[in-house]
Image (cartoon, rainbow, N blue to C red; front, side, top):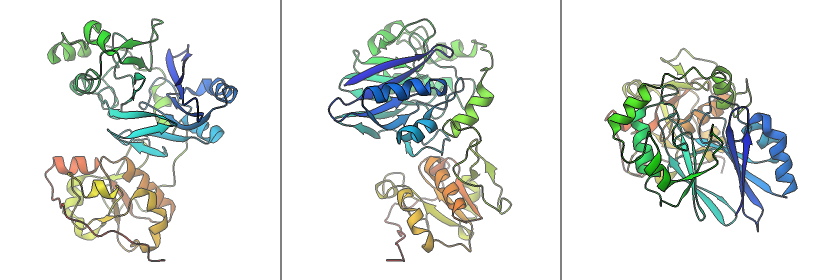
Length: 365
């Protein structure tokens, strides 16, 4: 595997370039806007074809170059389906794989610093790109962006420290000039999350940090929810925002709470945009919902009802948010995403079916 670790001195941020040397297919992890030309030049010098640009999370300290790399190199943008970045071409979840040539990265959800944090794991060679979830002898803060010290503790212990000890750790930042660590080192020496620390000790450490407000947060987070393109949105908002108690997500998606949807399911059309294996899987689906996978949604709009409000559904709210904006752009005026998706629905113990639901077919033939 071809591997390059790149650095942005202003924000102490690392960007990673990985490529298959035979096919020349490549991925970029956590690109920084100000380093766009450097990264594009390197890709072209090495004669690589970038197929995916990955962000480990919605950064608060710098703006991603995801959107511009998509424009310049034709790559797909990738983010967590929990991140709120509905601008991304691919919204991924725990257990997904991102393949490039003979190589692949396993997606591991590692929330806690933010709700949408991901770690990308290469099993051969053994490498883990941990974002801010696990830093060298440290970790990301947990006091904003839906952060949780308890969640981060369990993410690291259960999804990172279970990797082989010789797995190399490549974080999104380092402020002391260090470039890499390993799972074994962090288990032994990490002063916050090492295996000698208890959950209570960790939460006490994190609550006492008293860190300053991130200098670029108010600019960076909105821009990163739009893949690094400030002011950009995936599509226009619905024309009618008064038909239900809607709230807007951080990325501008109209959302409805699970309890309201359950109480009003008879007067809305429920469109589940997951894949069939998810729909029929252990989480189940909402009674009366129809299956229209996101990849097929645009081709099936002629069969969707326009006379009733529409609520889109997925696992956690990422793909359904993307679907809601897509439908708005196609002229549906009363549409919203189910906030928190099926994960929140099941947590509230609302009605679920596990049989095979009706699947929307293309009435145009």
